[in-house]
Length: 437
Image (cartoon, rainbow, N blue to C red):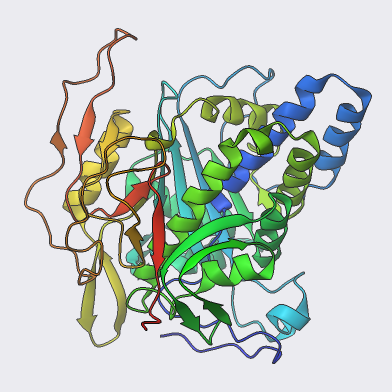
């Protein structure tokens, strides 16, 4: 476990356990694009000023050497791969909340999420990579010139410190086999501002949460979280599941799924003032790749996402196994189920989860998901499982015929191995807190 940082007494220190905080990074990019799309099509002078104001608020971009921005605002052609990274840097953050930035010892990508939109825009998958997962890291360029050597095995959360956002992109590309032309980085303040702009996110807590490390104390029930409370909920590790960062990921997915449902709520999408606030909050707190730092591109991505049903917006955790040996405080990738997952994404097949929601969450009512679709019952590794998924001997199982070139033919659905946990946005899940009565 990494060492703790010192913070002002007002908020407990951020500790380097197995993951750390997260937030609507994935949905953040979607928020920006959706809001800008609404403002653009308004055609009013106020809308024109709003777009200018949002764009003027954006930070300098990062060059990934990827696809140039499109010229039109039509719906983007083909699929989309977008990496969202949550940085733990204190630079530019409120020192009263996050501590003295001059005492920062390094920058880590404590949250790494890959959003894949299918070619036909009928499904979106968000893959969370455990921060302490040991992976190969390719050679990455140093900001001051030269390059870092490639490493055979290092924690994925160190990539941002080695070579910035481009290094994290290169590492995830090598790990998944997917080309990633778009990327964004967000800090703590971005989570606070985004949750405020959307008016808070309702989360269900099945068992109470008591975490003195983040100051998160929630009784069982439903809570509307925004601002610092939302950030601390997303950061909590000790308060959910078995206290690991693997449990934290599934707890974050409870928040993200609810956030997606909030954004698809007509009251949010039909409120230009709220959408403008969301867009500005996201852009002003994100560092975007140059390929993404373009109004047209963001509008195109929003157009690709707008008609995807909740049941086909799926949040998954990269399959992994806990390795208990000296000097190896983390997890290793599980290559067989990972191959099943990414082969399905590359082929634009819809995925079905069989492994439960993960250690940090439970299904509130398996019989009645939010969007009315059937939800499979949780299996070991989901609701209170061991946290060390069983390694399958085969890949995913195809449950419908392969995709056809005929647009009227539904895409194939691949049933993933039980070691792949997660949920879709149509499922109502609750945080599995560790405060038992």
